[in-house]
Every structure is written in C-alpha cells, then in structure tokens.
Figure (cartoon, helix red, strand yellow):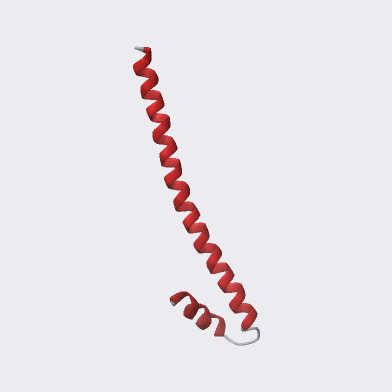
Length: 65
C-alpha cells in the first residue's frame, strides 16, 4: 500500500515538473520577443531623433522584414 501511494505521489511531482518546464519555455520565448521589440524601438528612436512619426514607419519595416 505504501509503495502505491509513493508511486502516485512521485508521478504527480514529475507531472508538475514537466508542466513547469513547458511554461518556462513559453515565458522565455515571450520575454525574448519583448526584449527584441524594446531594442528595435530604442534603436529606431535614436536614429529618427527629431523626425515626426518616422519611428513607427522604420520600426514596422524592421519588424515586418
């Protein structure tokens, strides 16, 4: 009886661990995308200092490819 309960508990811990790894991968991907957008925005703002609304056009061109 104790072995079965222990096995079930260990299986639950393993499932929680794998779920945590999946969520961590998603979070890293989103964080990388946000960091990329922030770097692009800062670079575009530095290049287009003083120009009206040119930052949006250049940022859209960089992100769009």
